[in-house]
Image 1 (cartoon, rainbow, N blue to C red):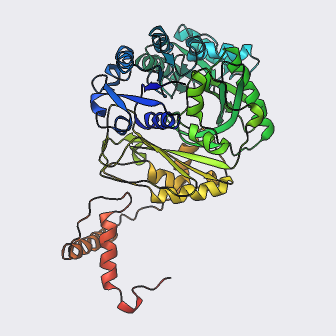
Image 2 (image 1 turned 90 degrees about the vertical axis):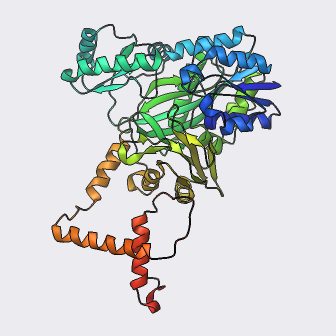
Image 3 (image 1 turned 120 degrees about the vertical axis):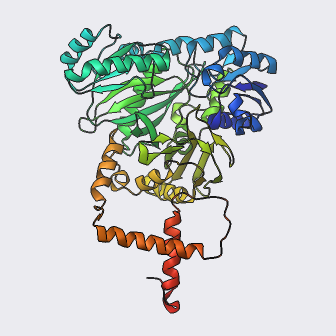
Length: 516
């Protein structure tokens, strides 16, 4: 087993890996940018090394600085987490050339699966169905036009080298193709340094379901079941579940076997995820891509199967076999995860960086919160604005939702806007409760919500009455003794508090505390 590991990442995933190292009695080493000098992952590590300024190209994407820190710290292995250089085959080769172990798949497997077009070819060769589309990058707009006509609109343009929704454009007609083609190429080049794009036919209102796979150097390759990841914004997941509410054992076996075939086709090593689109109407599934790393949403699989995936990553990379076989994998209960972002859901999920002035994290039976921040920390403009991953486990989906509601109500963050109010609404939404999910869920949720909201009465007399009530409440509040508070909980409006105080003062004393 390794004696010391460097974690070439930040935030909650760095904290998660540090904790796995502690369980294995491995000394964890952190790296940090200038913006992260006081971050939680730095404070928890045994050693920490600065690797550059705040912008990620000068720090967390600086392979040379990371390897230099690893050499200085005299570590034996590097864990990349997810994001940044986690799926960069050249980074894995650089680590190997430095005499260190890369905790992840081989560079060769990453080369094949890192390109969406070569990954599609590998899936086809493994006998796994793919979404109809091209298996080579598009060479020109004319080729895109001909191919789109062949498959029929709508089609999806996607970055060959990317993921996470970047370089992705849906095209509904030929009139939209030119601008979508140019924008997809430009975004792909900016995000991945590669402007190549390919084309797929759109699967109408699909579910996004992925299979967790794991392989070692001893011939073992297994799957740990599926995760439902259909609730997305900007093609990025915000809520994940294990198992899928479809809860079809035969489908799980077929998708799991397909995922294992793909992993074996590229001699995969370690943790990976094979993603599929699933049609509720036809019950068919199609290979989408393979993520050659640990997924953000791995906690829900851990909660349901009982396996520590980060621990397995480390032990497999050290040369040991997996601690379990396929027949050992069981799924117990249901888990749901919400990605808590510093974003404003009422403003198209626009980032909300700033200082966390107050933080109350939920806990209790069945609740897990993976976080990389504490009260007083700054959510930087330079990195992904995720604060934490809140997961709830229950004996079934209904009980998991009940626990998630309670945890969301406990969770409080001051100083910045977060996605917590959005999640509080989602877990009470009938479509969510009844598991009627697809990748357009959020758009349809807002449509339903807008239809439910009553029209605002803008008649002058109504407006004047509202102004008078607000003025009275403010006047009353100013004349009351003030109590100093050091935070503002989300959803606690000053207008609402003042109005309640004013109403309380007018109520007859005998009725003031009656319950209705």
